[in-house]
Image (cartoon, rainbow over all chains, first blue to last red; front, side, top):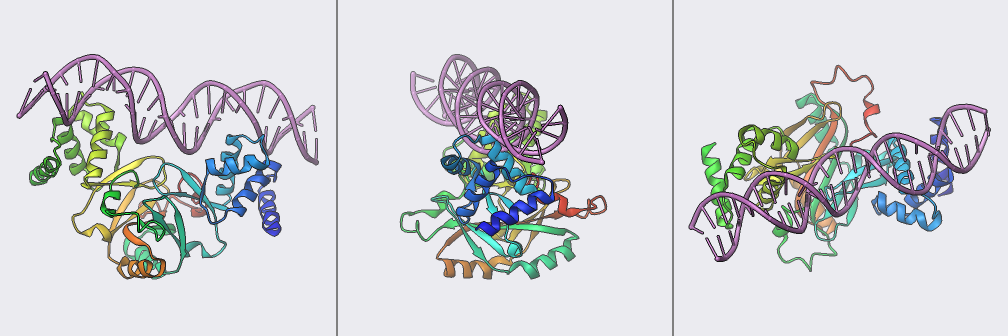
Length: 159
Length: 159
DNA sequence: CTTGGTGCAAAAGGTTTGCAATCGC
DNA sequence: GCGATTGCAAACCTTTTGCACCAAG
């Protein structure tokens, strides 16, 4: 935990940015909720508990900064808000998401199925892959008993 | 073309909706630009050429309706706008997107690599898959000569 | 008539920006 | 003191909604 904060501090100063108290509070919230895929608003509310004076704009600016430095990832599941997650140092290309259409929860899965697929895409379509997004939309194990007609969930809000 | 309009008309009336002139104009624009992944604004501007009196809200309502009836798909590549594409009758689970981080163009590729992967996910994570999204982010063949440092494109606007 | 559909303008919701105040060398 | 950073409020942009009006059975 502390090492990770320190490491991020170094990444920031390498680009001439400071780890201000607001930025540190934001980073810590992100670290403490690493598997939650928080939205900016979520982060804001959590940071406020520790640093009540912080403004929403600062949170947005911090998230943007961390994203630019590739410390965190922006995610978009089409439900209207951007979410953020830490970038795994190496496993970047090997983790995907399970988005529950019923409760909106995002679970994470890890695997490296896409390696061979990416090679084919690069070759066959002359497309230089930098990153990918693979998300499965469906019903999570927590909701499966509550959903009678899954088809109903398809077209609606989510992209 | 005409058959497809007719077919959509039937799908609408099956749910007690009419194919009004505005809806028909919208559908035709979608059909005529089937591989372009248009945004609502794009559709609006194109429809206006044929039916200048149409309102943006009607376009949104029509797109929402078509999406609810699962005639079209909403897509979101994290660049701030929702895009729309026709739902292939059967190949639904077998097409993916190549999103160019430089020019924003979306190309489509078809394949069925994900079948076995989906089976594993359903089993291993007890997650009932309804749909998926697989998008490769990178540099398309049209842009590859203009981009010197692809890494620069990673964190920025796009999720 | 009556119901569904439309256009317009206003509202909503998430995100960004301008600017004056503030912080930390 | 000076440039970076912050908080606030206003602006922005896409999408949704309220409402009066229109159109077709």
